[in-house]
Image (tube, rainbow, N blue to C red; front, side, top):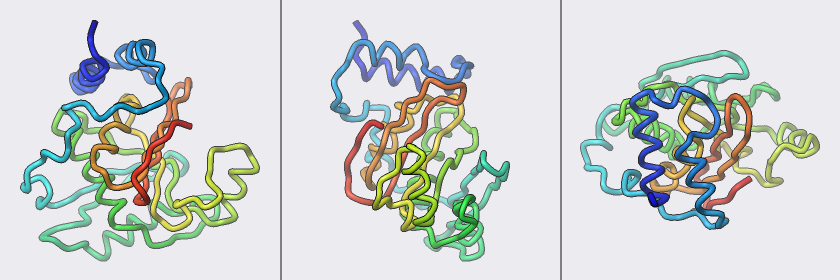
Length: 215
């Protein structure tokens, strides 16, 4: 019987070749979940060993291709080059990751941008070149409280309020595959949010303590 690692690896490779055309749970992920009911998250498969990336990956210019489904905005922004963050591009990204409900912008942790970029650049190596969807970036305290009152998963001391967290997804890439990859960067917390909807679930990523959970 294939291991969970093999199933997840197959899932990303199928996504890369365009064989997973329906949103939601992939067959590989369904099989993985059916075969393993443990609430503990296993270490990332070998395919997701981002720690093995060579220095060339980290020093090349960094461009983020992002979309905000809530507003329909899409931007492809070169924000880092020759070891420096480009200030005007950084401000554009802060605006794109703003609180679209509270209509406020705040500084975004550059480490969070690094995680978003590395995730997108990594899956592009396997032919997955879709934009990264930002479902939630910075949140005001009022917006965060409103989500809690509405029953939406949100921590009372959410790192979203500090510009250190984002809820994301990549269309047609299963959230478990995405989350396992982000977790392998070891840059902070990773939350796995599985949903049986047309769009599927999402992944929370932040630059706080290294930890993981399912919500």
